[in-house]
Amino acid sequence: MSTAVAIRGWEIAKGFTVGKVTTRVLEALSVEVLSGELTLLSGPSGCGKSTLLAILSGLERPDGGTVEALGEPVWKLDRKALQRFRLRHVGFVFQGFNLFPALDAVEQVELPLGYLGLGPGETRRRAEAALDEVGLAHRRYMRPAELSGGEKQRVAIARALAKRPQLLFADEPTSALDSVSGQTVIDILHRAARAHGTMVLCASHDPRLIAHADRVLRMEDGRVLADEHHPHPPSKPDAAP
Image (cartoon, rainbow, N blue to C red; front, side, top):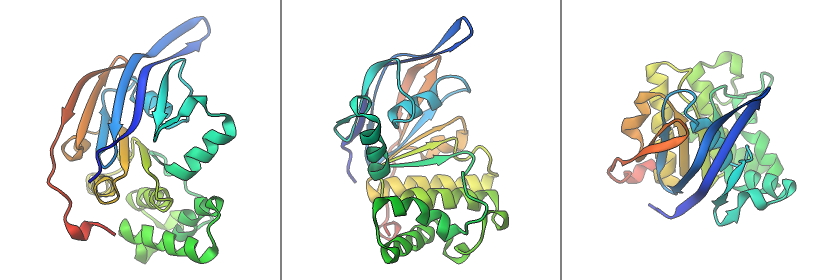
């Protein structure tokens, strides 16, 4: 399993202004996140974990500080270069699934692959392999209305994994799920980090994730208060695709 540094952030600062009031969300925060690990940003609502996730992933520009991802200075890239970087290297999983009602599961997963310039055959092969990895090969022709909440989230994860991203970001991926579905999603995210060497960075206040994370960054008031490492045994050979 690779443990190279995938992302470095230095002195990251971010605030939001409403009317005449500015609230500082992150203040001079520095962090490194490793590939091949599931790292959890943990803390109460409003502590800055989702904002930090958005800044590190290239979705939200910081007020100050720098971010380097896979050796690229993220916030020095122009808009088109940043879009290309996210397309080629980054996968996203969100709380709300973001699925299209008219598309079945395999079509949902295929959708972003078209922008990578892959042919129809390779696109379908990757999509079906990703659905198989999350245990939904038998549901590949089902539309979102025919899927449970846990299955929808697994389709969203398959859509991210099919791109073979080096960086995978998940924002509250289990908060809308029951215990069993949430456990399945956690297992899939952890296996993705271990089997593929992917950096998986997850922001969540769900305590179920803590035991499964390789590393927990506990946040409060825009700062990292604790950096905890949770050793896990190596993945079994049959966990790899």
